[in-house]
Image 1: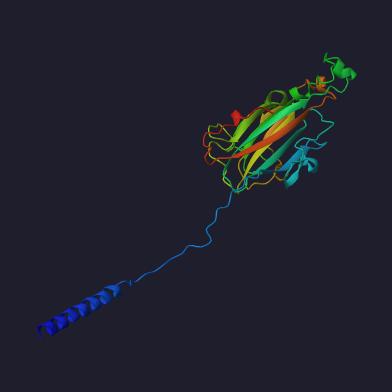
Image 2: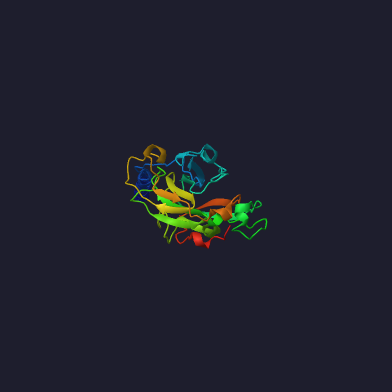
Length: 273
């Protein structure tokens, strides 16, 4: 009798333990949620510098007119900024250079380097004032004066714009880099990088003689032919005879580099052309 009771008690305890184990296993279910971000990518940026140019030159009447031979649409490589022959004293020209960078914010620089100064023989008038006769001893580069400025795109020098690079070609075009925009300035566009997918303008005027500033009021961005004004004067310096038949050739280059992680870049650090 006593043994039977213990058996029943132990059986009951076993059932309780088993039931408890089942109950404990049932607590493993929880509320849950999952969110997934798909299609994550990295794409490298691009830096593609492209240049276009709109050019004007004086005609036989001394008035500026379009110069198709030195104008070109956005392209890579560039066309010619200078392609003029038979220049007469007081001839002048102007260009608006449009500078485009791709989607990377960029610093930008410009440089020009004279590669030859041909004498091209001498006529009687030149020989009377020019004693140099070497093949590469022409004097034209000393009589071509230039001025460069940050322009609003109309190719006219206006009274809210500033000339930043000026002088005779023989002095100016030494192959050193000038800043369009770099970390230090002074520069055409200061020490703020050019914004990606933007366009800025650097204009230049040249004169066979003495180039003078005659800035005009800012207007609705019409070109110098329409306005009848360029912002400059050009007169003979009365000494051009020594440059008769002489020639000048030069290379013009632009350079751009990303500004991101390159905050101390200076155009002057580049090697000369």
